[in-house]
Structures are given as structure tokens and as C-alpha cells.
Length: 350
Image 1 (cartoon, helix red, strand yellow):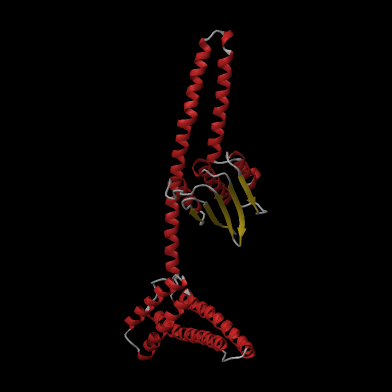
Image 2 (image 1 turned 30 degrees about the horizontal axis):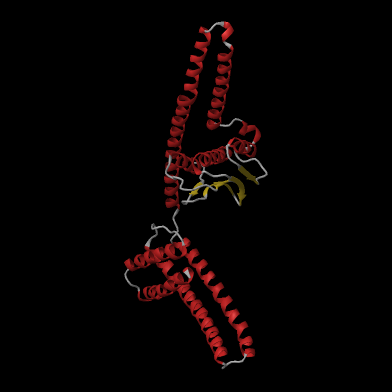
């Protein structure tokens, strides 16, 4: 229906474009009609174009677009005619004015008309996309400006993400490891003041506290950068994330070869942060990590069956989005109330 409505509007616009080309209205009309076309293409066909075209390109586009619009109008008329013939045939069959054998003879013709009409609509849409990109598409200068803007935005995002990561590491060290070290120092001080014969219990507590501090340091180091990623690869590291998650995690890794180091690092942080958030906030009892290749993209998808409602503007997810954008990737999060929550990161590869 969306395609039909878009082509119908385009067919009517084609008449105005033919009049423009034939009558040679002032050049300002060219840009006005072209701007209407640009809005129609975005609204009904999802085709993005640029506003940096000149009047000459607008006139050329309108001249060719008018022919495509007439072709689309003819295709729509053919489709309407086929539907009308089919409706008349069915009505005559119901009221007894047509025999079943006559209907059988008409059906193949109707199917052919339907096929031709549908294929025609698809073809006209493809032609419209091609014309729009050819004459209204962004110039090299516009593409360069967009790329510079993207790089500036991603660079600022990376700097902000790094600063946020440093602040988080400082909080982990201050609130976790440092407090435990203070407790350990106090415990050792108490031990020194005890008689030698009464020190066993305190020494055992100090040993346990030292083990906990070591575990906290190991967790902080893993959050900074898992060194085993260089040796074992992304699949083994994600398997370790699944084991330490505290909730059931299913890993589905279907990429046979090693990925670039930067991509593996970003994919690890996306999966680790998403699993940590699910374990803390989602009340989920199952998290699924999927890592797969798709054409020239690597897709990392983390799904949990929790209560949903994840805050995409929070520091964790927004930091992940900036980290992914730094590699020209894209992060999407869907988390309706009641779940499920799906975090998807797409990275270009190759």
C-alpha cells in the first residue's frame, strides 16, 4: 500500500513536471517541484537526497522523472484494470452470468496482469531511486562534509567514553579495592597486637581478605582490557564472560576466523556490559550472546528475557554506542516494558 500511494502521488506530480518542461516555467519552479519530489521520496520510498543540487540538475531530473512518473501511472492503471476485471468476473460468477469454465479461462490472464503490474511497480520504484541518487544525490563535497562531521562526532564520543571509563575505574578502585586494602591493613594491625598463639583466626581472615582483593583487582583488570583476548580470541573470552555472569548465558559464535583486534575489543565490551546490565537489573534467567557475520558486517546481539525498560541514555549504553561509532559501527537497543531487551552492535569488517 505504501508503494502504491507513493507511486500514485508521483504520477500526479509527473503531469506538473511535464508541464514545467514543456512550458518552460521560471527556474524557481524547478527547485520547488524538486523539493516536493525530495519530500515524497523520503516519505514514501525512504530515499535520502541532498539539497546541494543546482537548477540544471533539477531540470534534468524533472525531465526524466516525468517519463518515469507516466510509466508508473500506466502501471497503476494496468493494475487497477486487472483488479477490476477480476472483480467483474467474480461478480458474474456469483450471480450466474458466467460459467465456471469462462472464469478458468480469465484467471490466467488476470494472474499475468497482476504479475506484470507488481513487477512494474517494483521497477518504477527502482528507477525513481536511481534518478534521485543520480541527479539529487550528495556531491563529493557534501559526502566529505558529512564524513568530517561523523569523524568529529565519533572522536568527541571516544574522548568522552574514555574519560567516563577512567572515572568508573577510579570508583571501582576507590570503593572496592581501596576499602578492602584498608580493612586488610587494620586486620593485620590487630594480628600484630595479638599474642602469637592467638593469631591463627586473624591470619585466616587476612588470607581470605587478600584473596577477595585479588579477585577484585582481576575483575577491574578485565574491565579495563582482557589480556587473554590477544591470545585466545573473542570466542574464548566471551565464554569466560558467560561463566562469570552469575546467570545462565548461552553463547552462539559462528565466525570461523579471528577478527581485527580493535573490533574484537569493541565486541567484547559490548557483550560484557550488556551481560552485566542484564545480571544486575533485568531479572532475566537467560541471556543469549550471538556473534555472526553478515556480508561485510559483524553483528553482535545480546538478548535477555528480563523485564525490559533499559535506559538507553544511561552512561553504560551511551558509552557503548560511542565506542561502536568510533569503528563506524552502529548500536541499537530495544527494551520495551516487560522485555525482552535486545542490544545489537553492527561493525563493518573487510
